[in-house]
Length: 268
Image 1: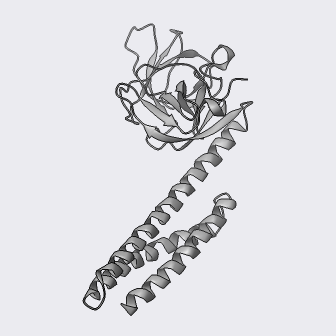
Image 2: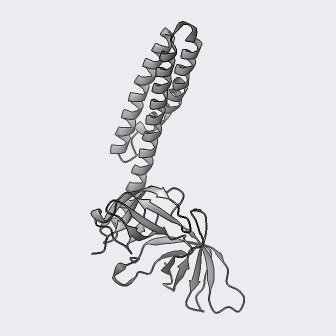
Image 3: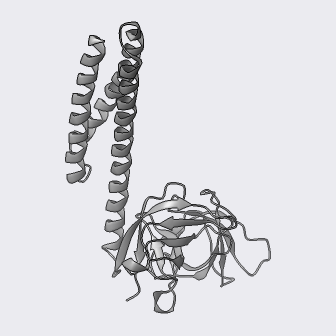
């Protein structure tokens, strides 16, 4: 039992140091040398977390069941803190990318975090900000990679976002190079994240090639979509021989299975 107490003390010290280093790295925008050091500390911390429980079980004959239960509880709490630290680091990176993207546009953006995903018949997510934060229906939602979707419903504290991948979504887009315009539709009926988007251009003379990038064309008054938001790249041309409507499949820039921090463009 003495060994378990000493191991627990070392564990607590390492956790404190690791979280301190991560905090320093956050403030430095992810470029601090503390990032690598904090990461290297996680592995031994997790091994020690297991050692605490193991030591308690080995010494169980000489100690109480309550002591073992207390050690296990502390073990679980420490693991939860480590997971939260890693999640927070991911959200900081996502927020940084979002700010970098929106700083080049004349957007007024309210940041929010995805707190729920999926609907019975639609590809949607729920945000932790709503009408009390100035968010309303038919406003563009994006993240640091590009277009996410549009707001379809709000409460004072939440907003429901229909993702660009939803089968009921149509987005006006244009080719970043030629400026040819068209419509992009989703193909998913529920949260899938990997469903491609379908592109149809309006001009029969438009040339499509894999790798071409698309941005939003924009709506009147910027609702539901503001102009110039990156959308994705053409992954495959699907135009049928003799067809007057060039078509293609598009891989979106945004990772819809890893949404965290997003921005809602507030109408001005």
